[in-house]
Image 1: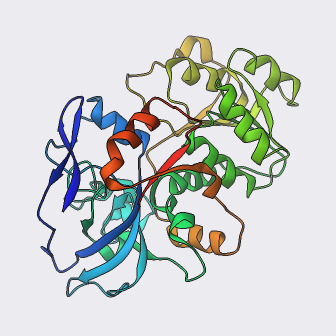
Image 2: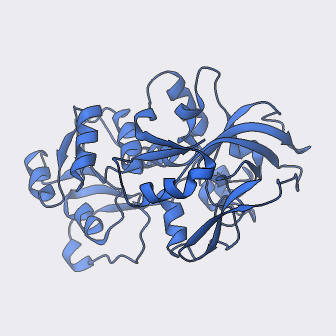
Image 3: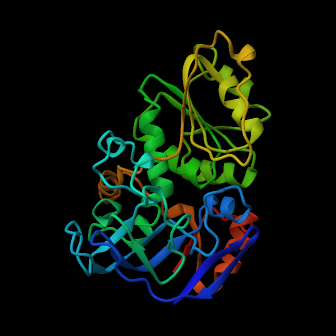
Length: 343
């Protein structure tokens, strides 16, 4: 089979690999029908994910059809259409039982697919701990509607949940890339008083304005003044930082009111600094990633009910043989791209 593979820092390639087989009783083999490219794949390419293993098939955002299951798998069966969770988790350790599946202590726990073991930008993928990592797609939901459930939408849902958004809140979301928009969609479910989105790209601001006209928009340069003007207590009640740049990290806590919650969803290329003398007295609560992707079943129900729709985000479609071009467009933010689907 063809598999898009991490060769070394700065280099991916489409290689021939053998089709995976069942190794553990808790494994499933999934025939990938559609996958996507995530910014985390670019982080691997750029060498900023030290645990990523050269030689692995990349990709952790996919849907497909169950081809084969191990003897210990009973939640799905061959023929089921499924989403694949970005994280693998046992469901039994301390962290899993408390909902912190990103910190699962199993050897394959956390973000393994497309990072430490072969992922989904290919034709077939072996999914460990499949009872937890696969969710059946409702019959009325298409592959495209479900494509983002296992990663970027799970991230947005998790971020909105841990941010403790109420209907009285003014919330600020910094970044309107794919994860930012998924975070926006899930924050909207909480029905806060107002949502402000800060995004430097005019193209992406237009996208938000077109699809979510009730959202207030600003730029990084104008953000602090804009938030002050549109909030009651000297800043946003809740801030979600989804952009992942040095200046946006600082902007997040600067735009928060005293005693606010700041949720850091972004993955950074470089360490960030908390300038505590400047922050003293704001009494902020910081919550940091990565995603605990244990809400996929609920997210699929919300999609089935028509309450979440991520299909506008999928702006481009490619075949697996065209994946180099897909990466070029996605990485360089060309042609109005938000997310791509690899069919």
